[in-house]
Image (cartoon, rainbow, N blue to C red; front, side, top):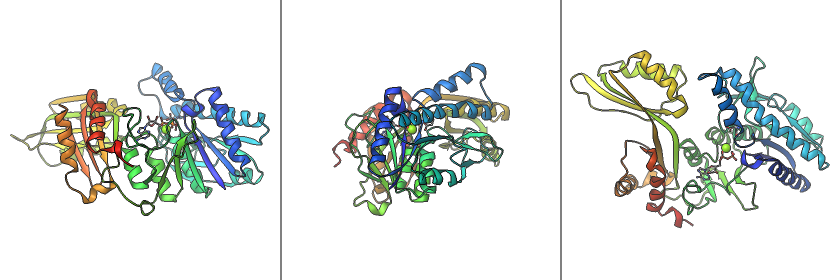
Length: 402
Ligand code: ADP
Ligand code: ASP
Ligand code: MG
């Protein structure tokens, strides 16, 4: 079997853990498999580097950030390869470039355009264990690029797809995908199998156990994806096609995203073209707007509110001030998005009212709501967001799920 094994930041968090990873990889190799390893930077490393850059600039050039951030993954790939060689294995570390990962030039959130697998195929045919530095690729100009936070998951899935691997294992610090973040609710239950669509929704709404773009890619390329712990032998969670799952629960889990911020515009002119102007300017500046609400106008004015990722708030602020879009602008980063996810919701009513009642019973105010067929998202005060997650987890009996 050809297996792609990705080890996240905590799994390679110190030298002892890198040795532990080397032992695990060696075991899979000894079992007769071909192995491509993808590694993250040691935990905390990427944030540390971002902090270093912030020391010099509020808005560092994205190209320089890629030069900086890609170094974290190179360190771990080389160290793991050295550890494996010392154990007698023929291992080789590859940068994104050497692994043939080509991207566009949107630095710090580049998209993979294609993977040239020649080098990896050659190394595998020679019996080598390949250790790829995750999270990075190369632009057409030959510059290093990175794939966005959590992007090593995407590197692993994309490589698994391009190499037609039999399996892609994402090793992390929890046993798999749970009904909610097990660090917030200890009664959270591990999900044995989850569909690509549901996992995509979960990941997009803040369950960082898998990066959302990696799930999208897994679905597109039909990659057999498993998340499991690098610290135990427990079976993980299989992310698979919907038809492989016997019974869909109505609600599968609760996701929390604390990295959200809200922009409120009071007394915006209530006339055609205003929203178009605001949101197209944000889009031109690559700012992702998520929830939007506008109330009914009075006296030719309306109030408009929307959310953006917290790390884009500064940019959004600047743009709003420049546009002079409203008399009164307000920004708030102390908010969080709590979401209920479930493919089974499509055919059931009453899911939303349970959520609203539960939060009301706990005295939590809902500031914004958005729904789709398979999710309900609510913006609440960040202070109460974990309480919201736990009470919703309880309200839908997710701790009792078999
Ligand atoms: P890695 O460094 O291995 O990439 P991450 O920190 O990115 O790991 O993702 C793993 C973390 O995701 C877990 O430690 C857990 O706190 C968090 N998490 C959030 N939601 C969930 C969920 N529903 N199931 C499992 N883990 C979750
Ligand atoms: N090191 C990068 C990050 O922290 C990529 C990854 O770990 O997947 O976002
Ligand atoms: Mg991750």
